[in-house]
Length: 291
Image 1 (cartoon, rainbow, N blue to C red):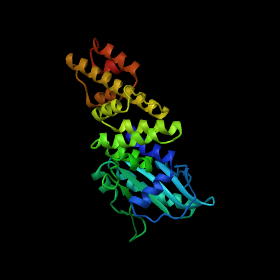
Image 2: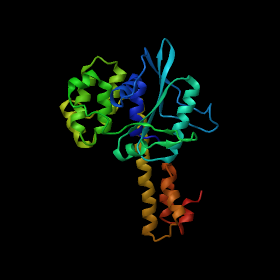
Image 3: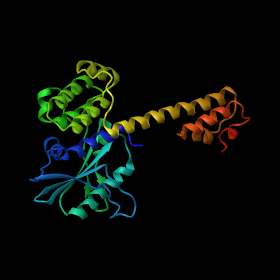
Image 4: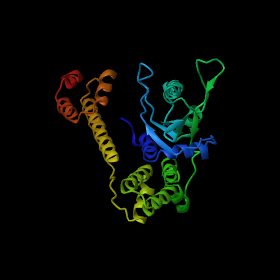
């Protein structure tokens, strides 16, 4: 399941695709061609390669309707060598589609992941390494003034997403005040508040809710409601799975690693409740999980 932390920067770029061009120009020092439009494109490259290659977000910069630059956005929360193997293919596939310069940008919320992602990738072309453009925490500005946040609200929200765990109240306050004070479309304001508050730890979020009269705030965007509900259901399922193992342990029934993994992997609450009932009387763990 895709996490809220992974999805949040992608939602931000889909809401305002020009943001990724600004990040390239202002914070990665990449020359961005003149353009009149930034457009979100399909992120599926399976039409070029026979197996699934899907980027997190894809944007084209266009002038008079014609693409002048393509930007691929990847959000990376951990090290994954398979992704580094895919990134050069993403660039090649997108270049084959639009026939202009391509930039692959990686957003990493952890400096160690950022350093890992920024390492050159050896390609099939001898002597020609592929180097991702990486925005780690040190490259994303810490936006703490409301004035700066109002000038660049999406950058302020991104600042809250990246720095919310360490500078939560400062960056959250600036971004939230900008979202509430600007004349933004209602759905965009709702999404920005959801993103900001989701990025904060419990204490700074509670303080911000009191300051801004948001006590008892409930996430309003459908994406966040669905993901929060999924996360809550997953958490409940994990608790039920642990209860199964607790009952088996109390009754001193042997649990193999294979069966332990099966129990912990189950997310069906009805099945887990049935296993808890069986665990109280079954003569073996196999009898508990037998369907």
